[in-house]
Image 1 (tube, rainbow, N blue to C red):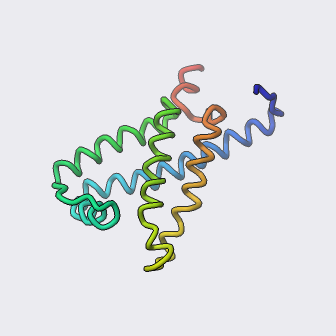
Image 2 (cartoon, rainbow, N blue to C red):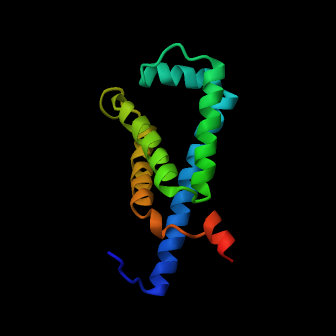
Amino acid sequence: MNATINPDYKKRIETCLFLLRLGVFIVMFVWTMGKFFDPAHTIRYFNRFFLIGGLVKPIVYTIGVIEMLFIVAFLGGLWKRYTYGVVLFLHSVSTFMTWKKYTIDIHLLFFTAWPMLAACVALYVLRDLDVKFTVRQWFKK
């Protein structure tokens, strides 16, 4: 379906999608930087929530580098099907694997993952409309 959108609404949608992308990037950036500044926290987190033991600092740093490449490409609007998909996947796994924080050992801060998950889904679904401040838009000029 190739629906035409009122130009005013199109600009509004593009601005909203950019702000969602920027907001998700900020959270993912801080989350990724944590892997470099406090790898022990990441090791505990993976062990506790993902049941992945035996991680060592070099592996955490490698995960951090790969994550950083994806989220920088995500911020730039590059390879949207893949980068938006990876961001959605990473955040989905993180959200669902911490289910005890929503049900048993309730921690209100963990509930902030749900609106961000909704933002990630919206960005993935509307990725073709998310063109404001992307690398592709930059080079079109």
